[in-house]
Image 1 (tube, rainbow, N blue to C red):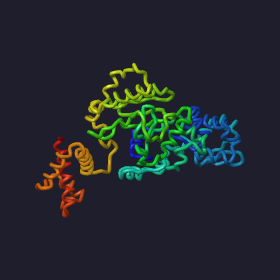
Image 2 (image 1 turned 90 degrees about the vertical axis):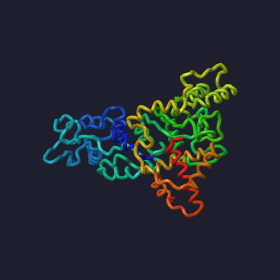
Image 3 (image 1 turned 45 degrees about the vertical axis):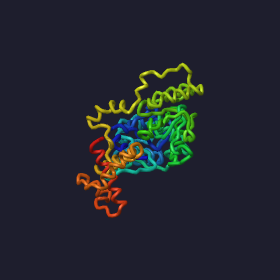
Image 4 (image 1 turned 135 degrees about the vertical axis):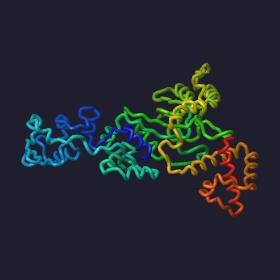
Length: 407
């Protein structure tokens, strides 16, 4: 998925490694035998790897020009390379000893991609950003078919070279203490989404010697009485089996699980679980003899509460980092406030139903305040007609009032 945050990483020089659709060039780059800067040794390396013949033929010249190794206006005629009025032998034994060879070379490799993606769902500002790019810059971001992006099947040698030291990052919903993950099916076998390319990407990470699979996980879900841990002892659904466990990350830390025993894995997962659930999880693990009965979770891991994350982020948020939408959003201020307020209303209705209904009734019968006029217009509830619309307006006002006073 090509999303707007990738453009932000590109703009800040973080995404900068280019890959090329040529195995030899990519392999030589990985081995640091060539660089993106074109020098005579670039030709030497390609020749030594049998990517080009000697003397150079028309096919070689076309290939070298495609990747910017030879200048675009170089031509070949009777074993002679021509560029303007300059001439040089196409025999590499002679050409590489001739100082004028540099006049026939390009300056940088061309045709590389920074991103391979199967689809994009960008906000409007990302469309504007992409539309403002030059054609050469747009080519850095390549949309490819899912079989190419998500698997090693077909062109495997090239893909392995391009994805050297790859880190395959996915999001999951629930994970067990032993790192089996459920990403698209929840309890009672209710399917809530497609698996997408997640299983393919995890397979790919396991198939490559220098790659890692990383699953991101919120430590909890729900609020109030419905708060639940997303790290559990066992679960009825599984998208990624525990045999493929690697790295799991929550807001409380990182569990590196590759090659670990079940006990080591369970302890590592406990350390990144929410502390409100650690005691029960540890008790279950001990009950079924997955963790030694005398094991005690170190105190340093017993402060895994939301307040800890809030404290850690506070200084950064004062500097305007880690806002709700750090890369921007198409939502207006009113839409964001409505979404936040109505989400909290749903929690209140579950946990404080009587109080919430009383407040809603008050807004149903009272004069409507004008401070939320824009919000009501956005919801098409500024002039309710039916009883249902009036009740919906009362709900919106109750939610917005609660958010405004922060009680």
